Image 1 (cartoon, rainbow, N blue to C red):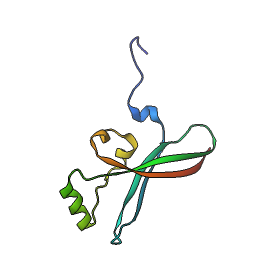
Image 2 (tube, rainbow, N blue to C red; image 1 turned 60 degrees about the horizontal axis):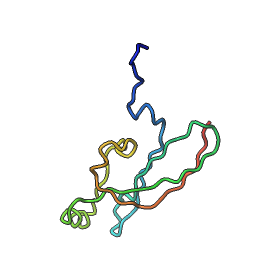
Image 3 (cartoon, rainbow, N blue to C red; image 1 turned 135 degrees about the vertical axis):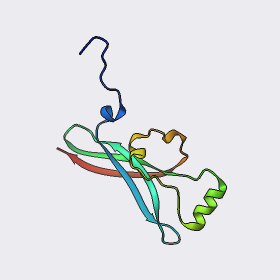
Image 4 (cartoon, rainbow, N blue to C red; image 1 turned 180 degrees about the horizontal axis):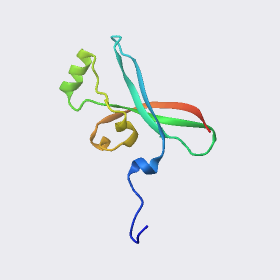
Length: 108
């Protein structure tokens, strides 16, 4: 490498693999709605791992949108799982904490 050359600093290359969760469940009217999103990095160390993932859901930005989504049964949700994994642009999205999910997995 030439002097002053740097490695790519794009977060996708530095972060490593992730597990992205999208949890759905029925609402009061029986519609399948999002219950939470979350992501966790997969460690590079082999073995059994246990991780607790903080879950969140996007929220409507106005009272009118909240009322409309309640009547129609359509809540705000992400269409692209990359939004959850990267977090890029999510700082302008209003979200609400929705609990935790604990997972255990094996890395080989």
